[in-house]
Length: 262
View 1 (cartoon, rainbow, N blue to C red):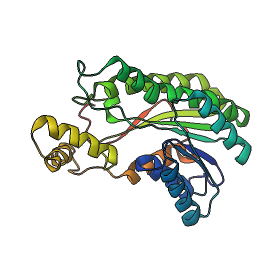
View 2: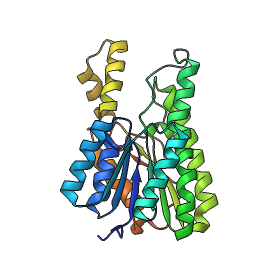
View 3: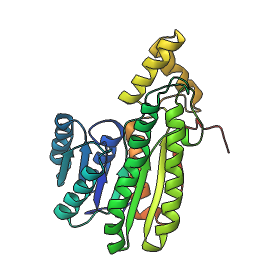
View 4: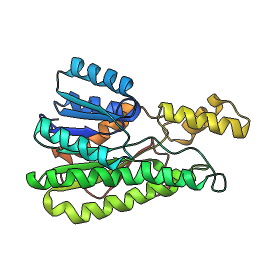
């Protein structure tokens, strides 16, 4: 299937590892020019070099913190200057720590808001004018199954990521007339370093081993396994493609059927 993405410009945040990196690779495999960012310069450059070599595409990679609105603005401007446009923007950031409500400090609430909500606002504000000029654009937020089904001891993620869904719906409604589609992708339990951190936290509080935690998560999905970053990435790329041209304002779960609602 031709996804119609060759030579498009895809910006992927937090793309030095995990789902973000898999997403940058998936766009590169479709012939996109890719802009990558993350906080760790060394890890980011290694990922960017691998993508350039493997797929033969042009890659821009800059290290910064997505909670810095000025840095986001400069990165989007640099992407547009290098490639001539910003067609696709995938917002992404590491998840907040695993905490219950009373255990979460006010500083942690502010950090979660900055990292997982306001960073999306920063990127959207910068990329939308570029997309309006071309009357074509895709904004895809990467959140979690917690937007549909809260997870125990993830109160920060449960609350803040739900706000992102409200933003997605609002942007989809406002900018659909400009040819900009805005959607959200919510992974279930996916085999990443972030999931290992959550398993460690859950194991320490429950008395179970990390493997027992992983096994319980896998058992909760009808497919009886954890997801792979590639599977989430391919869903994101499809949503960005011409094949998904009448889909906007939606949350697509990539969770192996773990969500129990209708």
